[in-house]
Amino acid sequence: MEPLSDYELEQLLNVWVAPDAPQSLERKLFSGRLRWWQWLFGRPLLVSHRRRSKRLRKV
Amino acid sequence: MIESDFKAVFEEYRDTIYHFAWRMTNSQDKAEDITQDVFLSLLSHPARFDATRGQMRSFLLGIARNLALKRFRKDKNRWNALEGEDFVAQPVDIAGRETADIVGAAVQALPPFQREVLVLAQYEGLSLEEIARSVEAEVGTVKSRLHRARENLRRMLGPLKERVERSSRL
Figure 1 (cartoon, rainbow over the protein chains, first blue to last red):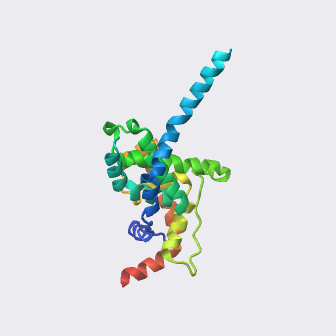
Figure 2: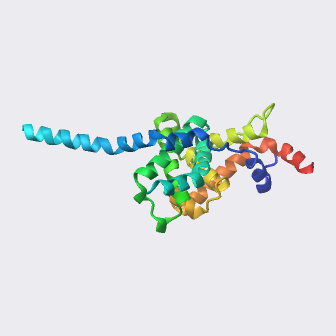
Figure 3: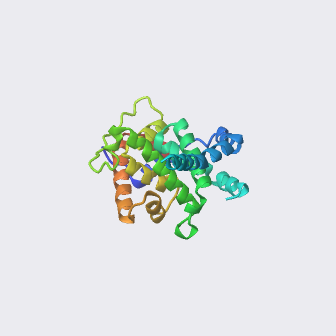
């Protein structure tokens, strides 16, 4: 079998087209859910720090 | 980062990131999750982007790449084949299949390290230097992975030569 030339490979690769990002992505990122996630991201450190302080006080 | 800046970045790069994630994972759900996580990561740590070290596009693609690889690592079979230096592709069976599906399956069959450089170069149009920054590798390594990826694809897609020649004649 004769191998594909660069040009032929290029042509074939261009046939494979990806779909665009779905609209649901925008809704997920810019609805109230985002602020909930932002809140969640900042939270665990605060909680663990408080717990550690309480534990230390008990000791 | 204020919300309007974030929205502008999202508008400009969401399709780029989604396309890359989709081509890496072959799944709309996974691509959506990865794209969402990329932008959440930017929102949580905007200072990690350093404009002196490269463009926003390569930075975001780098995050997407790491998230996609994290998923591959969970799959032990694929983890072993991430680099895939020994991977030698076989010609694919093309009977009764659409050309786009065959090409997609061939790219999916590449080991992840070859697939990511191929996707970034071929479909996202990144330079070798930009790819090297995104995948945290040397330019020479990127070049050789890209070369191996193209050789493997040439071998896998060889049976389509006749179809390409036919469509060129039309």
